[in-house]
Amino acid sequence: MAASTFATVSFSLSSVPSSSENSHASLLHTSRCGFIPTPLYSARLPHLKFSASKRFHRASFGPIPVRSMSDPSSLADLENLIKSKNSENAVVIYSKSWCPYCLRVKDLFKQVRVKPLIIELDALEDGQEVQDALQRITGQSTVPNVFIGGKHVGGCEDTLRLHHYDHLIPLLKDAGAKFL
Image (cartoon, rainbow, N blue to C red; front, side, top):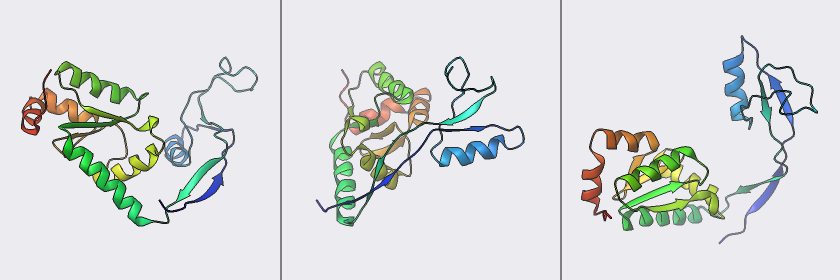
């Protein structure tokens, strides 16, 4: 694997009050800059002096390594590996263990009695790189990322919609999924 160059990016603690006239623009701007929309109340953080109004809070993440990809062939290799995993297995779910949408999709496959291959991105050392490759392949940046028969189905809402309209079971049968 090619050597990567690392740079350090630091984030610090700050809060941005929401204003009634710019609340939507503020939320869009702050979410792109790493802000996490979280209501802060003085009861939760008694050592900080905030009013009871909602504020947007940016957590302190400390130094984060930013990798610059110097070898484009490694990107292609990763994408090929993902595509081969998707085609080798009837059902593949790219997930994060803490995500409620991922849990809902996993429960759905338990309900229909199909055991998918579940790849927990937060448990992988290169999970973010895999998620970035999935975004390049599918155009979807969120999890869960569901594949049936090597074809991208979508996320949680798409998979639930397929099940609701009775299209999921035929897709699973066509893909050769083994029902328990």
